[in-house]
Length: 313
Image (tube, rainbow, N blue to C red):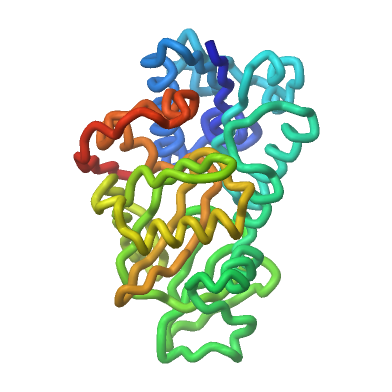
């Protein structure tokens, strides 16, 4: 029996000293519930999850109530499990810092190593890695003077996650830009997709290609839904791209989400999320696999169907 401790940041006490906001909790609960269900439906895996004490109405027999901001770094608790599975945003290096803490204390995880997470969490650094590997990505502008505002650009936090504080700027816009904390990149007007992948130390398996439903509201991007498993996983171009990404970042491990845009046949890499993402929540219904069983059975389970699954965010 494998024992896993799940630490989902928003529901697991990461915001213990802040107000819990419903817009953050919806996706967070979706992921936590999905992993807990995977544990309940497995004969070989037991999942316990940290749970903010203010959410005690969601308590079940596998919940560990969190009343102190020291709970998630309790070495005795962490070492009582075979693995820790953190689902934490990359924002301000939160995920990196926590995984580095686990590594420093020799605690086993089911996630990429901290050095890889550090690269993926910093959009400017990731852009540099993609550039050196000759992988297509949006162009980055170093200053406002370098921009041709005849076309749109994107401004996003350098250390952000998801659609958090992403703005679209065009030639009619007046805008402020902080070179230290933000990046400016070209706007790619193509099809927004996400890739759900499982990486091992030496290889990978593409589980699904998902369509992202993104709306623009007041010049800001908002992810409103995901259609899981919308396209064939046999695209040689996508498989080749993933092999190059694995060569670029050999420390990628476990479940990883990669955001891409396809425009006129060219694949642009937007972000690499070195953790479970919302898209994975639809995989059980779309593919018929238990994510946790998938890890510990050396991913020999067959994908038994190819249905789509819509997730409203």
